[in-house]
Length: 189
Ligand code: GLN
Image (cartoon, rainbow, N blue to C red; front, side, top):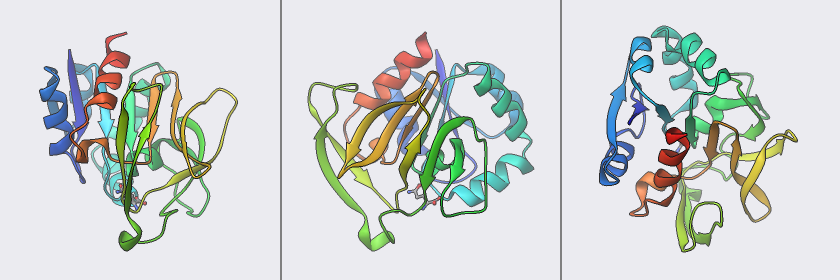
């Protein structure tokens, strides 16, 4: 099994390290053809506008979108969640639009308002997990086919829709491996 991390911009290495710690083969993805060599893809945190532009420039956009619609496992963290969303409440831009969620960009304010909490999330683990939010989006509404996995202060911050997982926060910036383990399981099926 081999999982890739989209490596056009943003926090790539930390995801790769987490996957490797779990004994999973992990690779950086920069070309559309490389999508055929992997069993799943992580869309990392970074800047969704920039990543959206680069997805199109590299030709990854259309191939990735087709694959996701046909069941290819993806996990978007933070900016990656914005890339997957059908709708963005406070932005004109739209990206892959495969996931039936409406997100609010920078919903918690600027970099200064970044924060971290611990929370037990039954879907992921029996132990509390540290959740790190950095200029994070949250989800303002979901389609009926979307499973809400976690809310913080009544805002939705983790969801799943079949082969797609999205989290507002950054598990790759903590020592906890629970959500990477969960995603590896999604890719195994
Ligand atoms: N604020 C960024 C965006 O809107 C996301 C931040 C992040 O990925 N840490 O694209």
